[in-house]
Image 1 (cartoon, rainbow, N blue to C red):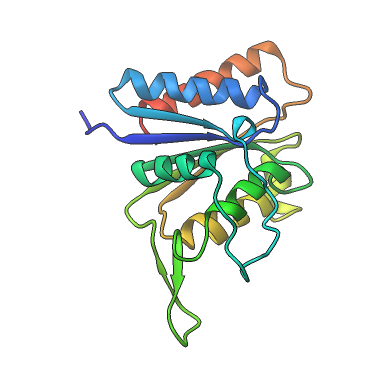
Image 2 (image 1 turned 60 degrees about the vertical axis):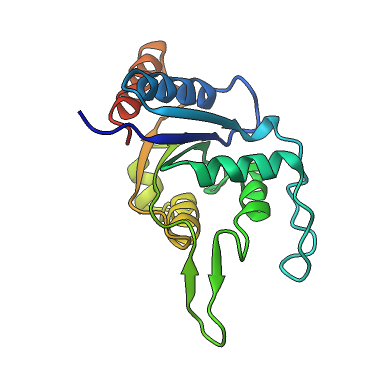
Length: 195
């Protein structure tokens, strides 16, 4: 049996009680059943300003909820991100969460007088579970899967997290109860494999 992991599940849907919440709970149940230590983070329940108002010119004070979330991310071996795709990208609240937390000196550091950087989140892996209202092959072929490029490549891998695996769930808007149960079982199995 594999060694248990420390897992943080980040639910990025801005509405509490969404199907993304059910997916997060399914992953959690599977991971706990195989001995993983699991922490849940629901971005919609955090009290923070998602607007990086000063950009990178002036560091904003991190609210207590963001400081606690960052401690959970640093604690974890494996990051599970669950979110819907809206207009090809991440929900604004989740994007704001990333903007406010994945900062220079915390997630990465640019090398002096260089275009290169040090990755400060090395040693972690991730899984992105994203819900769609179109077939995943359409999202990939026609649109180039921008949310995956943003979260996987330009954020997580940029900061040293790898491998980052992706699971698509959908089509949500016309799904049946049986399809939803099947998706929940699939995600629970991912949790059991701690992937």
